[in-house]
Amino acid sequence: MDVDFDKESGIGPSDPKGKLTAEEKALLGDIQGNILKSHGRDHSRHLFITFDTTKAKEAKAWLAQLSKTKVTSALKQWDDSRVRAEIFEKSKKEEDPEAYLSVELPKKPSGIFINVMLSAKGYDALGLSGKKPTDGIFGGGAAGAVSRLSDPPRKDWEAPFKAELHALVIIADDDPGKVAAEAKAITDSLKGGKVVNTEIGRALRRGKNGPVHEHFGFVDGVSDPLFFAKDIPKSSKQWNPGAPLKLALAKDPGGHAKTGYGSFLVYRKLEQNVDQFNQDRHELAKVLAKEDNRTEPNHADRELAGAYLVGRFPDGFPVSEKATPDGADREIPNNFNFSTDTDGLKCPFQAHIRKTNPRGDTTKLGGTLKQERTHRISRRAISYEQKGKVGLLFLCVQSNIEHQFEFMQSAWANAPEFVQPKPPTGLDPVVGQGKVVKQQWPAKYGSDKKVPLSLKQSVHMKGGEYFFMPSMGFLKGV
Ligand code: HEM
Image (tube, rainbow, N blue to C red; front, side, top):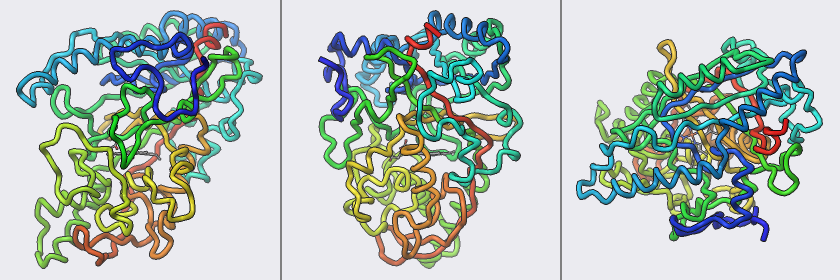
């Protein structure tokens, strides 16, 4: 039986120790890893390549060789993940609840992870225009999206992103030394092109194996669509994270008729101005303190103000569920929606997670939850630090960039009238771009008195590109 691309209950066995079907194996063997599930490694290097169009033959031979020997398929990722899962399970059984934070992962848990992908111009440079996926806006790349997304003009991007970027190789491992050595080996092997830029990613963790957080200090990577049955929680009545394969996989025109699928990857270098974010949080905390007849904000005001901006407290606990961070729970809740907070009195409409995943809010606008869920993206981001600046190398995969990432950024995060036109919701305080309008914030948690305050932008886009992660079959035979 063919693999079902429409079902939301996930593929593969629901028992983590169960087996894949032959069809699932064939599909996972032909698609790259990191699409249906994050590779989960803490260190990465992103090599941006420009090909020499007069040497397309050499470049293609290099790409095929790299794919045959190094690129990680989803099937290899599946097999390797067993090792990691066993270690994690073992660590969770320890009596000390904090023990899992200090469990040593073996030196080489699953080996180095490698992805490769092409931009639309990359397909052209290799003489492969006929095999290019036909997503409407892929051809224009990130540069073509500037006005749609209210991005800074390309002339203001960091210099390496102003170059014509043809391919991206992602190298990841838990050992940064191994990542650097592999990056050097791949760069040295490259024929018919040049590595024109390298971005270095490093996951920030609480404790050795604790949850990942981003530079503003909030746990990240909690809520993502889940594609494997074994990962989808059985009771997820308020929010079902399960997702059909068609949310992430698009037909690869150059791939195998049955199993040839790839995914579109949006790459954005997003610089985070931590001082500005803290200033915004402080201004909001001051307003909350004033409403409580205090002159100076206290710790609780600051925590709540941060949670109003993100929609979760720094420890990941959703503000729609509680006025204070939980602290005690190890499992960060994701089974919630905003049906008991329809006026945005606990989690403001503009909070980052409510703007980017309204969890049913759009039904008020006449849409359906089913339709809303088709805009979901799968985030594969990692933090960076560079020359005193910090930020997020924001990567997300999807089957249609226009319908998913671009829609989320422009029609939700950047749209002051989403999800409420009057008074306007305003921009997403984390990633919104465009005209700033005054926003309304709950004066007290859960109260219907709202106070106005507008904030400054603390995340700035520094450059990016759109890529397609082709099928293994296409890459090996290129
Ligand atoms: C969730 C931070 C950029 C879309 C989150 C969370 C944090 C966060 C802390 C909550 C944890 C979680 O649910 O995983 C950031 C920061 C960014 C950034 C600091 C930039 C520097 C973006 C962009 C988009 C985006 C550009 C898309 C336009 C999402 C989505 C979720 C999320 C879809 C999950 C919401 C949910 O399902 O509840 N982000 N983010 N983020 N973010 Fe971002």
